[in-house]
Length: 248
Length: 132
Ligand code: SF4
Ligand code: SF4
Image (cartoon, rainbow over all chains, first blue to last red; front, side, top):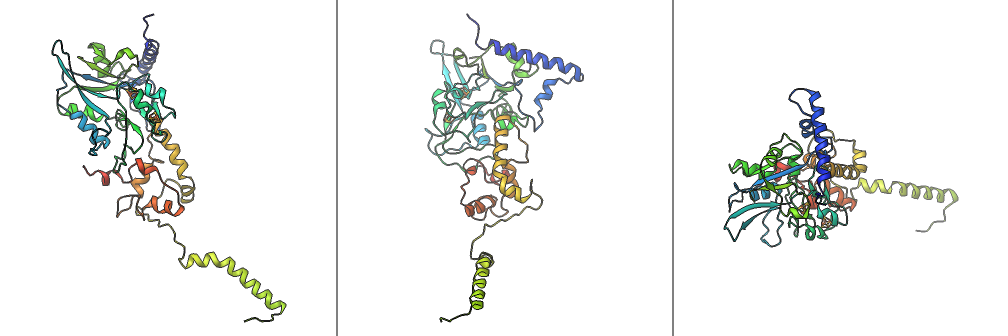
């Protein structure tokens, strides 16, 4: 059996989209249902027809550039406490080099927003969870700080906060004793903005990061992953991350 | 000071004592001997519900809203903690905490610990937006 564990799910996702696009034909020329679903009313819950994702073009990501890391820290209020070994890390730059060919890559790595997230499987309280639109989060109201998720995540995407925090961004509550990781800037997505890292990368003219709905065949990200070869880090784990890399 | 009072006299004393006992709490409050929470409301206008409802039910409202926001991405403003802070932050300190802060003053009085602000910002965005 070579069938991918995700095949069934992606097929179901595809069917959902086709239904949505067909429905859209009836609405009005140029307006598709999926666009309406994207611009969600404030009292409407997130939809499972959406699968938020990131595409990172490693050919455009320069070694040494940390614009995305800085933007993340500013947006989410991650401050240097003077203890770099234990400070929370939501996104980091990883430098890779193929020793045989000498080809080097520099890639940002954050929570990969897995479709089958091990951090959720192991959480004893249900604090680590996946939102319907594919964003994996920690509900700090329920987190007991056991760190199981930190151990389970193969991408080292989760951190724990060791010190009391003050002056948080009102949109990004975080505090001592809770596990946390990249939220895909969920507070920005919920008001139709791009994640802070993507915005910073584009603004600086690097254009190495793309954000969008992988399930919407008309989105830029979906068209790019359909056109260019992209991979998931450790795709062999079959977690189907929502973050994909081009040129790795 | 002992007196051999008649029945009527004892009755009158008993009535006076009863009256005093009834009035005592009122007198004590009136004399400001019992501290009361400071409730400073700088921003004019109406809260999302009437005061009695807010006093009794704000924890449940916040809990209900937090689950909707966290798990379903519903960010309506009416019962959100962020909006409470927006309106109720003190004009002086910019915060809902502090001895006279809107949240802390009552919670100190009632001896109920507020855990919200271990994680949530106690100041609205503008006041806390000072870059490090
Ligand atoms: S990358 Fe790690 S933290 Fe993120 S969803 Fe996957 S297992 Fe969970
Ligand atoms: S640290 Fe928190 S989120 Fe992580 S597994 Fe433990 S309870 Fe769940």
